[in-house]
Length: 254
Image 1 (cartoon, rainbow, N blue to C red):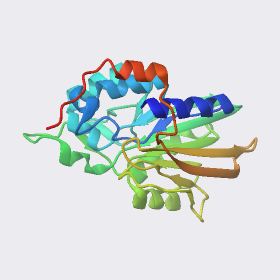
Image 2 (image 1 turned 120 degrees about the horizontal axis):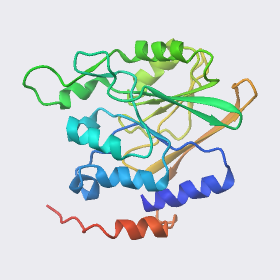
Image 3 (image 1 turned 180 degrees about the vertical axis):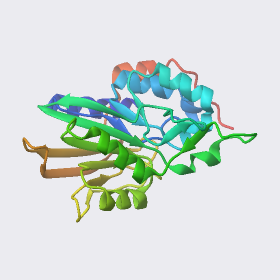
């Protein structure tokens, strides 16, 4: 997190128009302070760094519904999912999208969650959440967004193959930021049918993805560049984030 904060600040220093997004499964961890605090430290760290949005990932539900609701309430950024519903109701578990005004554009950020999350929920009667079909859910959101946004970013927890299907079947998407199963893509893939860009940046914060878009006044991408940056030792820790992390006890090995 401390190296990530340094890199993010460097990017922000170079360009005022930056969106910081996470495509899900960031809260669950088998070790470290993420595990010992049940995701609370992860959310606080993301607050400190200044994330703009995060998609609910399927594995984030391993924390349990109540814990996840508490973390959503603590976040200074929206958790997004257009296809996770509370039980058998028509109420979404989280916001489906958020619109951000930036550089004269209205940017819609849509979250979509992998249907595998149901396997992480405990049984015993009715499911606490239901997951609708992802691609149709995105179509429904785009219909609602008509006239409200000129750039659409889908923050997807679906996985690369389903991201490819989404890009090929649904027009109107500018970019898909993927995060499941943590595939490392050295450069973006561009769908030949509708032109949506797909990126992923690895697993558990070892890399961070940077996608740079040049966009005209109509919201069309005129050029792009993408890379996966290794958060290695050559990137110094952000001093404030490092000092905060050092307040946590060092996890003991099992």
